[in-house]
Length: 76
Image 1 (spheres, one colour):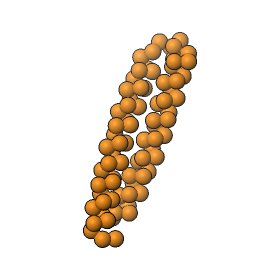
Image 2 (cartoon, rainbow, N blue to C red):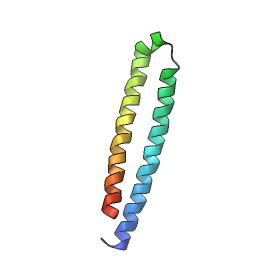
Image 3 (cartoon, rainbow, N blue to C red):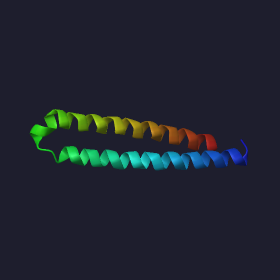
Image 4 (cartoon, one colour):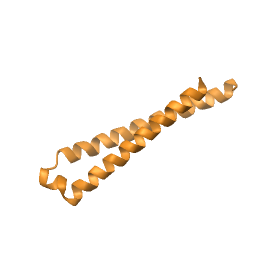
């Protein structure tokens, strides 16, 4: 791999990290919203929807973390 390709991979890993961080922030906000709901509303449709969103964002964060690691390894 040449220096230009390593530079491109470095830029990509930085972009992945920015997206990953943004997803984590949104996930944390949604989790806080869920945690602040009364217990009855947590079990209602609204609470269930928020829990589903948190779960999907957590999955996205984990997959982006894996992608970040693979790109970093490829650039090494």
